[in-house]
Image (tube, rainbow, N blue to C red; front, top):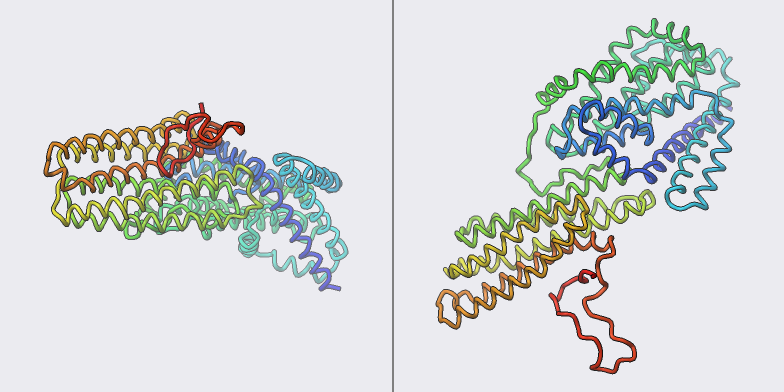
Length: 575
């Protein structure tokens, strides 16, 4: 009998956890990208950051997901540590709001929520369908809580069980540690607090012990991001999760000695134990926010001294932003993959700068160092592909799938561009150095000018990958024609120098023309990486550079072909 009851209790807890997960994933799929964008724009100061963290977490019901987003911003230097800490204070308050709602007796609406959710999930489009998932999750949470209370009812007067529970809960510090461990294991402070409310409602544990367990749940949910959070050797990546743990630990240390007085006051204000637990959960986090918000600047300074930045230059091919703990939140994980992809553009830019110096100075040692950068590109590209492909397709929205393809396309083209530099351009430079050849002043100026233009296009492609601007995409796409013109004019000038009998041009003839052609190929990959995805989404690309021939036109009669482009040209721009 006892074994069956324990199994029923375990099933109710599992149903509670699954319902909370459905709420979180439903909200993430319906609003994830917009919530991330809102959070990004709101991180201007500590007060707007606090409000943004509260609002986003109240919707997501996951302070961990909010923390992962903000940690990514902070690691990428897109937001200061002070507003990031403010967001976490707001997130801690936001995650208490669903507990407030469920502290009322609303179990009667569970069937209605599930019925409405199933109807929306089965018959609606993507957005309402995901919201239906949220309603189903809320209904399951309410059913689980009702089932949990029903299972406890027959045992609430069993003397042995009450004695055991009271023995366990007689020591507040032990209560804190137990709840912290359970919360870390369950990855949900909401679930643990709801279970504590259930025990308190049935009188299985006193209010003072319930409040101690709530303190432990608040501490445990802050431990998760610290243990499973940002990877990498730079201690600065752990400032934010450590700061969140320390301020909660300080709050717990202050609150534990005051629990007897707090329990009396909460019971006097709110006789319902469930409401008392929920109110304390919210008030504790609001109190921490009121204390720490004015002190965030010196607190951030302390964290910087405790965890100074360290850049690991020993292995530049090691991913910095591919956070494994973000995989369960696809829109957060895609943001991490996008930040890592921008590193590919940085490495390619370094290769082109080094190529320019090699053409000018011909340093063999620098040639080996530059070729090693292609290995960095290869490893980073492989890591990005593995990370993105490993995301759960079922947890991704249409926008998530589109962004994933954009990231893979950008990374692949950047890696291919690096291959052209490594295998072709650096090989040609190496041949020039070994043979002791020198380009003519005009020929060298043409190559350097093309490289300078290419460097600008790399930066444009990186910007376009972030801001998705059609005007910038058209400008980058137009660079294909510019490079065709550069190649044509440089080739004509080169042959004129050959006809004039210039010895330096004769010796470097094939090298010069091959380098121009390969620089154009690099530019083609840049356009394909960043410009064409944007223009395709705007409907501004024609499917082919060849005009359709009318069915009735005889062979050899029909519209003229458009001018031929590169052999690897994608479709051209529409009218």
